[in-house]
Length: 213
Ligand code: PRP
Image (tube, rainbow, N blue to C red; front, side, top):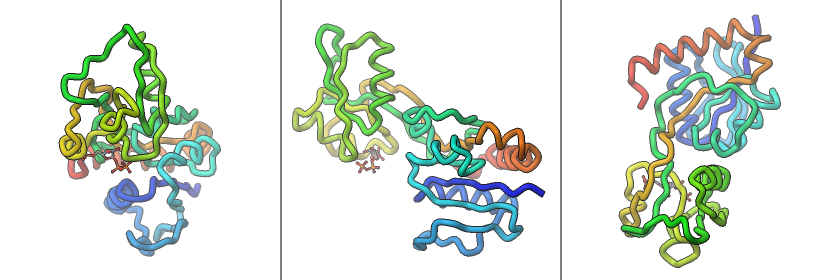
């Protein structure tokens, strides 16, 4: 029987994905949230799980270092890897938005300065709208940029909206609905078709029950 290697985005995504996998019979006994271990085997010995930085999940899967991965749609949109996105796992729901100071008007007449942890998403969005922009790549605390005048607007994840509210910013445009996705290496889907398709259909059934959102 084929073995399958699954890459999970470290943190909350991995915690929930591991709970989902347990419900479909793939159990990692030695996993605990606070452990620093990065490689785990399931109780059947058929599935190996690796924990990687979320932004690295697509490349692990594209290169075949993992057959399957679980990662946010935000990362998939940003990284544009050559992999199959096969299932919306429905958890980790949030929105990718353009945000700025209240009532800020997006203008076509001058260059817009945009700060984001997601430079490709931001560039694609404004190019698509015909808005000339300069993207400033930041690694976090993006909400600061419009407040201190580093950028006109930001492109970022909004979940509860608390960060925006506490920094007196608001959503100017919704761009995408984001949630965790199951992705598969293109070759593995053919060579390990039986085990991977069975995994997809078991997880799909689970998402239809709506317990993980
Ligand atoms: C993310 C995101 C927003 C915030 C949105 O940041 O970039 O800043 O969460 O969540 P909310 O709508 O529930 O407030 P993260 O917590 O990853 O921290 P960072 O600023 O270091 O990137």
